[in-house]
Length: 177
Image (cartoon, rainbow, N blue to C red):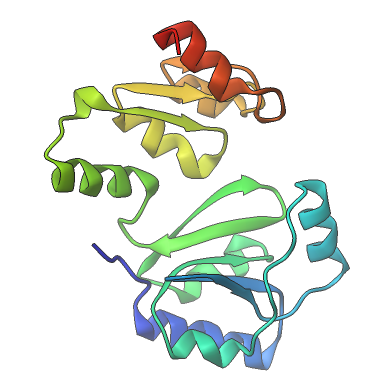
């Protein structure tokens, strides 16, 4: 199953970035790439202890399927130009842009269909705005302890935070694993 950002929206983004560049991560099928990085991007990636993806020309986005975009910009400056996309936020410094109707919940639904499973066999873990739909749709939706309150409100359970083995804590407590 593929759910790509429409090429028309990708063309719009590439044109925007050529006129007024800002950092933007593109999620392709096999990897991520960044059009360029600045001090803010380096700071964000250091704060979550993840290296920024490699820098590639923005035109690469026109040559392959793009499934997600992470622009380091305020959404009101960006989303009005992308009529076929939705945005969620889990960090105040950037947004996650996906095709309209696309989400982690849709990914789980497609996996359930593929493996012929029911929703009763699902557990999800989330901590950000991009996880809310997913934790609502699974039988057991678990919010990490470091989640914002709105994520905890959407979940059935709350566990420890990301940095202190919250997933393992939940699995031990709930399933005895």
